Amino acid sequence: MELVTIHYRTEADKKPCDSCSQTERIVVSKRSIAQLYRVTLLQPLLIAFGVVVIFVPVAVKASESKPKLKPHPLALPNTHDPGEVDKPELVPFVVKDTTQLPGIVVDETEAELVGKWQYSTHTPPYVGLGYLHDQKQGKGASSVTFTPELPAAGVYEVRLSHCYNVRRSTNTPVTIHHADGEKTVRINQQDIPQHDRLFRSLGHFRFESGRHGWVRVSTDGTDGKYVIADAVQFLPVQKQALRAHSPDAAADSKPRHYKLTARASEIDSRVKSHPEIGFLVDTKDGKPADLQHAAVDTRVTPRGKLVIWLMSHNEQLFDRINSYGIHVLRPHYANRWFSICCREAPVGEHCRGNIRLEAATGMDFSDDVMIPEPDGMMERSFQFVKWLESENPAGNWGQFLTGDNKGLRWEDIIISGSSHGSTTAARFAKHQKVSRVVAFCGPRDQLQSWQSLPSATPENRYFGFSHVLDGGWTGDHYCRSWELLGMHRFGPVVNVDNTKSPFKNTRRLITDFDVGGDARRAHSSVQPGSRAYRNENTKAYMHEDVWRYLFTHPVNSVGRAVPMDADCEKNQR
Image (cartoon, rainbow, N blue to C red):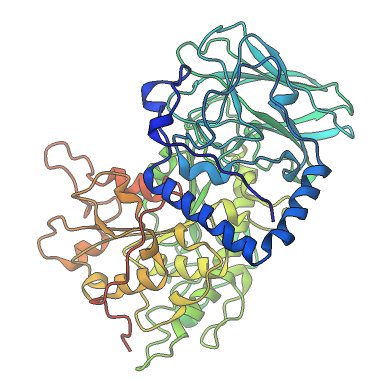
């Protein structure tokens, strides 16, 4: 266990900050200070039980095994106390010890500085002691050059670390000097880096061994905004993984909005019909029944996320997901069992949950159906992404494939759906860790208990949105599932029509706009479409902020836990 020293201060002894704006000059809240005092008060108890005998030698040994970082001698010192940060919730993403990171990491303490740079710890996350900023001065005359000592020649993925907020440069030039020449890219340092909110990929480049390559962050053309320089990471890349997370692969000479379709049976010859559950490849009149949809907008800065949508194709929803910089696809998989299986009364407690999992994975979880792997959601999505990578290389679909090309990178995938699809999405996320779950008008399965099973996906990654007149809400189905999934631990139920984004950082969102008492309209009103809430004059959707929140709100920004609702019936058998 690593011992961490936390510094804090009160408002009374706060020092002035000459290098930040008034809005940046904040300190740890009284509640945070109180929490720190509670930690401090525990120390005598730990000593009394002799815990210090166990932990201190470990900490001393760790400190002796690696050199201590020292601030760069040419950089101006930090003016902030370590506890003085603008986003305390991002402190857990700070990586103090560079040896904990894979690959070769060059910190700013080892870089070559030109011009005036100043240390700061005010905006986490960062690597090492802190990060450098250019004070918004010396534009065009300042740079930071990171030179690695590479152990072997080969292809490396280059990642740049930088903290982010609205005061950062939107067009920071970064030059990569590699074995085949030089490339300069401009990055928006207001965007959240896709790797642990810390590193963003600059691409894959070939380097010689030794100190022949470098990466340089400069300030040319960045007037009026802070340029950040923190650390650069060099990750050796296997040949079969070259496409993963590569902006180079995503580069599109003519950026545009791609909308693609393909038949599952033409992508994978193993695809079969399952007439026993009404699941077909072709309709009775010979029309394709296995059409799949995908979309990506290469005009938008990518977030490195893919939504797999488990319901009928909704082009308006896909358009919005793409506008957030997120890829999206809808697979055709064996999901027509719902009105055929598990109809007995009383239904088995795990009947529907097991079929959902078998339909999602193609693995044998249920005795009621026989769904092989090629007809499950996982395999069909995997085969579809491989097809998309080949047919639409400008879309950079290959970033969602594992390095060995044998599966999907589920940690970068958002699983989402409406109604029946949202329930399967949540059941799958219990089994497989995913980036997040977005459930429209769901989940349901009121007679099942899978919602309370241990979850492979952390509970703070589940999001739900429904209308209060939806039968799933009036029957306590949604409130029950939400609470059994643990969503109440991250905020109360919030009416989005009365509260602005970020909706108290909650995971449980509702609307009560007028649907004329129509429960069927209420059910489908929470996603874009003819039944959604629109302004009568402008025809604009009124839940645009809600949809963006559901798919992009940081999963580590959570609301305050609330107790379960005693009026929500949990036992509905």
